[in-house]
Length: 153
View 1 (cartoon, rainbow, N blue to C red):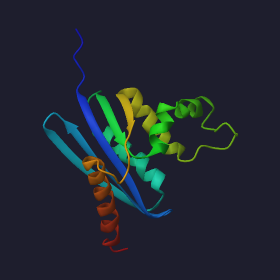
View 2: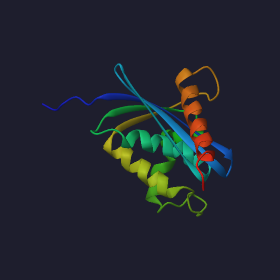
View 3: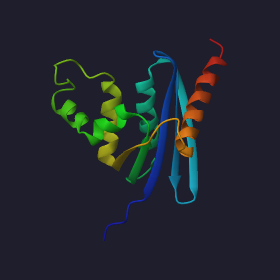
View 4: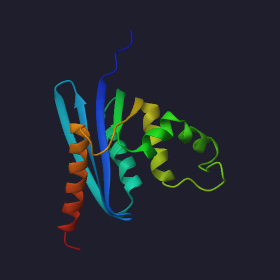
């Protein structure tokens, strides 16, 4: 008899001050009554990289294979999985249909690998609306950007 996988809810968001520019990501992991908030940032990045990083960082915190519902306001991230783009990119050597290289392939490869470890379902949420957890992830991401500015070079 196989052990039932834990069901995790992961809310994520990424933000950038300038694009490219200083960026931050935030994530909230929920398991039953447990809640964990994580965040981080990079001095020079893009919004899309931060959106992907938020999901990656959340999934990498899981110690065992889990069933994960990922909620993101990033169509870039969600649609790549729900529309199957990422599987086509991997099959085509990380090239798009027009033959050009897929941007952020380093992050897509990490994320695709994590979705093979966990059973991940992606859900698109409306950004900057009335979703409390999405708004909190945005807050975490923006705080991470602010903390970058406080670090002396």
